[in-house]
Image (tube, rainbow, N blue to C red; front, side, top):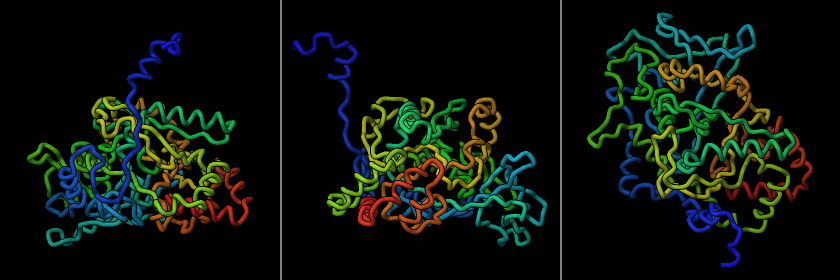
Length: 433
């Protein structure tokens, strides 16, 4: 015990009582990560996979009929090739402005959102003369597609402490002498009125909470109102009472099941056969050496079990607490020369009520500076994605790497100076993720 003399008490406490760290479970087996039992996870997946009908409140404007439709390859909750369309234009002072999109022969104009829905429920038998399909006006010359994101393992992402992400951003900036500086955005936790957290979900880091994310997607992607997003985009052709999503016999609404399903998913599994190979291991070493891992961070660790997050509305359970996972991403915003110029629209993602309540807090966040920034794409599971980058415009790893400029320019230059065999080793590493 002599070696303990002089060690501060708080360090001794950490040494003896800190919970041991463990790695996140991985796999594509549709099994729970331990947050809930497998039967509950399967029941939540049924909700996630369910095809929504008009009677459920689908639309009137929408993109998909189920969560699974956009998050399914290779299993429910993963990514896909499905894209959504966002547009806008620059106003007279150079600031981004959302489009004004007329529907129903110009009798209504959709405003306040950059998302343009690809589908509509009208005309239909009940409303044969109502044509509400959105079309992009010629005035909206800022246009982009965004790929659906992987959700597997996002329960671990949600459980990372805000401070861990802000510290990571500061460390990046310090280590790179200001050349690579991840941007942290504090965004509303919609289920905790007045509370904010570090954004980490969505291509623009628009959500800190998986429940907030689920509520946003249910309305904006499927047109189904819920307690977090109770206002329809348009009332035309709408016949189902609001909110469409109401609690079931278990007291949980669909968005609660969606959030719990995502929280209980395992992290994407690497290709065990390739990952252990000498070439992939060489590629990993080169990937880290040239600086790719500055943003594509190899490992993050969640906060301890019992920690309250999301404005106090969620307590990290043991299955998600003190877990190390390997996303190969930092979940921060960066300008790597591929930004789409779209500014996240506050009422669209958080609802009108939150926008009115928190306008003072939100004005302090430099959202405008994030217009040409995109959240670092986590590379776990990247071998299973045939389309890369936020817009899906890159089809090979070489294509995607070549597009990296801005903050990543020096890293890209180092990659381009690698020998052909070294580049192939980096590709082998990426094919193992």
